[in-house]
Image 1: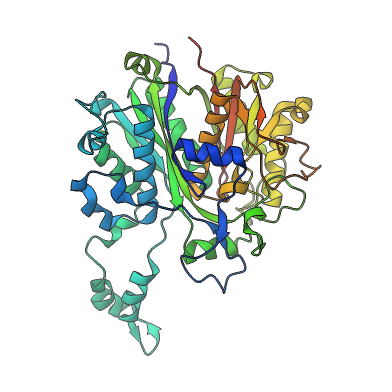
Image 2: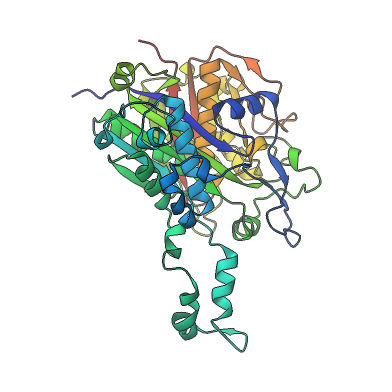
Length: 446
């Protein structure tokens, strides 16, 4: 049996430069950055004190009134995913239970819940330090932590449902409950590669006729002391604290790291027949997916392969899956986060796959605008690539006006530029663990 064609009908970006497709795309075209001084907590003891924050992200504005009590057990990551789901479903013109209950859609659902799946990438959700501090304070004996006292007294200060705020699968849990998605569902936690892997799994689910529609992507908030410390210890952060808007510089010769951030995005994938039947607007067709693992150094698991071997393998697989050649690709949407070794490794992968043509292929990265959104990074990158293809316009890779010659790429820094994009490839990789993934999209045609 031949596989079904899969198209993209809805986009739900939730980012430091905008919530929803219109505001996000406008910010990219304007070259705006969402990286600012951290204000949600005191970062004075950290080397890096800048981050990307999503403003006006109130979950009550995106769920039915009857579901608002559930927000008490939603960590920030979950809130971002629920907002992204609302944006994606609305953008796709779906009539889900959530939108009908909120009065944003009329009539009956236009989707069979049993054929509606969800695949969402998530990170290691950071616990609320205020809640933990109170619990830990009751578990000390003469300034020393006591496991016995923690079990008898410390844990009793936490609410009974406390753990449900911090389980990675709760992003998909809340999204599927709110929108009544009763089809195949899964959660993927592979760092920055999570979104691409989740989208790839949803792609396979629809192509294989296990579902008609899937909501997929990822979300994460790294805007917390705990996440900031993790990234700081990994020496991944820029210390340009006085100029946060220009701190993150993908592929630039003077790049010195990324910035923690929060955000993500969910997209609606549908079988072509299902989308056409309901008269949906089609942004693009998803035609290829490839994944690989390249954890090559046991002593330094967070270091990328110097030649970008794993990313190159993922891209080759995705192109083969799509039935396309490197010469068919008009745009490369890179994961480049502004980390010296990782950017160079990814650039080497592009050189391997595209050969001499790499100097002509337009390359874009949006990390200068949004920073490192963890498990949500790939979805935001992917949405940017979809919009670039759909609007035939490539936005600037901001802060990268002096590209590193060692990367050897044609990074678009003088955008936005008009471009007749027929097919694009989007890449991702985890900053530790070795997971890599690539997605190929092309302009929809009958």
